[in-house]
Length: 141
Image (cartoon, rainbow, N blue to C red; front, side, top):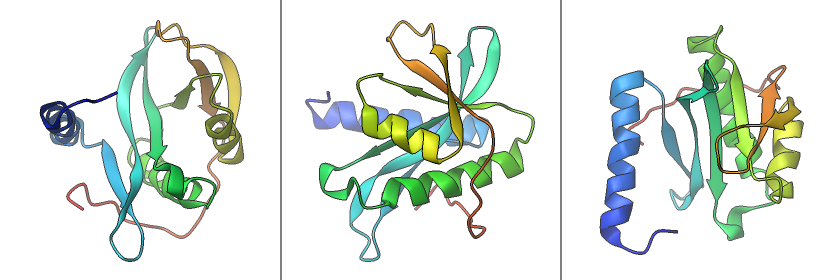
């Protein structure tokens, strides 16, 4: 958990560098009034000896259970698959986070095994992408 503005600034800078270096990263998700709801995106990680894209989503409690994460993740997955069709996409999820696991399953991920990331996460691997309308992602939004 972050406890200072400096930590938040450092995290945002690290995310910006992912976009600059790899052309992928996390995006701020807002509502129709441009109010922040959460974050969603992908970034390259090594899972064992395999390079994968890890799907990440985190939303404010007030935004949870309202379909925002599904809509954002669906757009991110389509965008990532169009640009990196041969790269596996996973979601590394805390097994206690049941809503996150349900979302991964709804998006077409299937439960794998332990990630081996040292964090106790479970791997969900994407089998298919639930298609929605095509969207563009601008990392500067």
